[in-house]
Length: 257
Image 1 (spheres, rainbow, N blue to C red):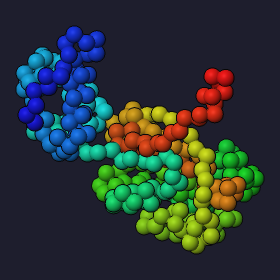
Image 2 (spheres, rainbow, N blue to C red; image 1 turned 60 degrees about the horizontal axis):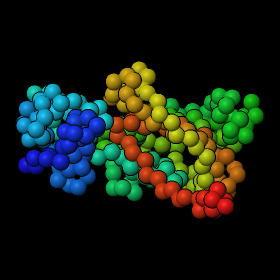
Image 3 (cartoon, helix red, strand yellow; image 1 turned 135 degrees about the vertical axis):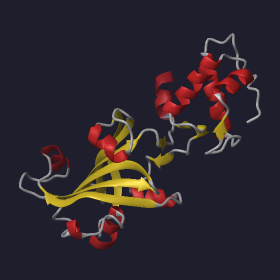
């Protein structure tokens, strides 16, 4: 890393540490810095940027909190691995999404059994109080990195003996389609920010209180048959969303009329 970062503007109202952090991020985005590259020390960063060592330390601490940088005690600070990009507009299971990007999926089944689902889940699946569902809870990883906790409920009547299937090695969505003839084609879901509790943090290998993204909803087959209630808790430091938005021109024209 040989740049001087002369673009830092000391007259700007934007804090100096934030300016430096954004310049480092830009080097990562443009490929000048690659995952695993070591970042200069606080002293050297400060000298190159013309700022104090304390300000450089603030920039590094900020980028560590956002997982752009990682600290290896006794070794130094390095560029972090890129975050998993989740396409929120495509209805893909974690296995399908990860494999589409060339990743290696590892699943650990935490629970797989026929249960009476919680009332709120049963209601969203159109089940009566006495109806059973198959609950599948899995810790999902990309390679050796745990990324999310995923819990699904599927009506037992739609998928006989689903509780006996090997869901550590197989995609739930692929199984639903190939064995049970249920091709999921739409999902109604919400996404919100949350934090990991002690149990979740322990499984995901992060400190309690770590930022998380919670994706929750219902997936349907044939547009209106509820097949799966899902709850996926993603590590906020390892996930980013991909979205494509379109401005409603008709609405704009109406407002201008």
